[in-house]
Image 1 (cartoon, rainbow, N blue to C red):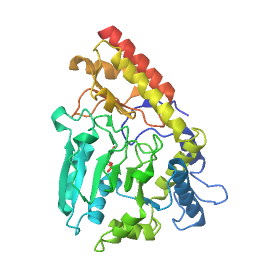
Image 2 (cartoon, rainbow, N blue to C red):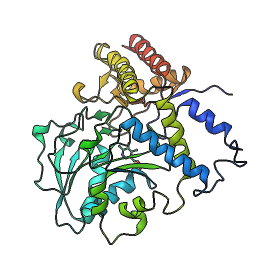
Image 3 (spheres, rainbow, N blue to C red):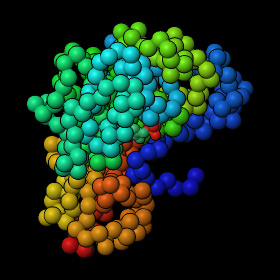
Image 4 (spheres, rainbow, N blue to C red):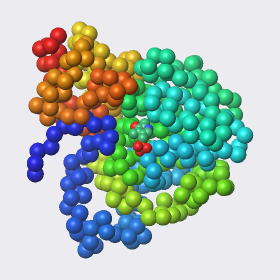
Length: 364
Ligand SMILES: *Cc1c(COP(=O)(O)O)cnc(C)c1O
């Protein structure tokens, strides 16, 4: 095999090598099946077992209580931006609250405005989205249809350490870039959704964990592909499901349960990895300028700038010499972003931390 580099891309992103290797072994012929995973029917016994196991793995990892459905949908997080208000806002006469802590929250909200009334419960724009709000700062609508927030803002690298307090209003979370990075108290949520291609698998599948009463509330007038109720009744197989992507979600969750030993251990490792990089930032004597306020720092996307933009080209070039790739930040934040999802090995983060220390020493 050709050597693998350490790729810090925000998504599609690094996957666990054992999951890739198992997929590779089964790519031409699945043992006992005689054809490949790419060729089997979504209604075959083999795939039925795969999708059931993927769901069972998620239920085990997140301790998902009874009373929640797990759906495997398509259309990425963007379709959830639309499906949430289509199902739960339009026709209700209610208002949906949005906590806008970065680019993705900002992108989600207009989809609610198409369907009904949407209200900004908090907006981090005035400080260029460098922190998440305190509960006391939230301007919540009583009896809102739901409150939507983004647990980890992938572009800015700001993350909620805990769920915002929203009382009895259903809490809806876009967890696309931090799903499965720690245990979640699912009972605090109405809906948690995540596209797969950050922390869960390849692009093509989107996991939606949704409370039964919200499935029941789904608007009646929707095409089945846009209806939580129809997708739940069809057990995520209303139409041809993204077979390969769901298979990869199964392999990635097998890895989390098996080799990684579950989400408590994964969380501890994620904290350790993130701390390595933030320590370099904090101990650089101001050479590195971290974007996020320390209490809002993301464990998944570490964002920082250099003292002089002229150094950015050199940083990219010298990082690449050490096989450290895809570090350039989003243009709205500038600088750099190291995405260190579950599957980024500790060794990759150590190598990046060493590089950053050397670079600061040589250019500071
Ligand atoms: C990547 C990302 C999205 C967009 O996902 P798509 O699958 O491309 O629609 C939305 N929200 C967050 C938090 C993301 O990280």
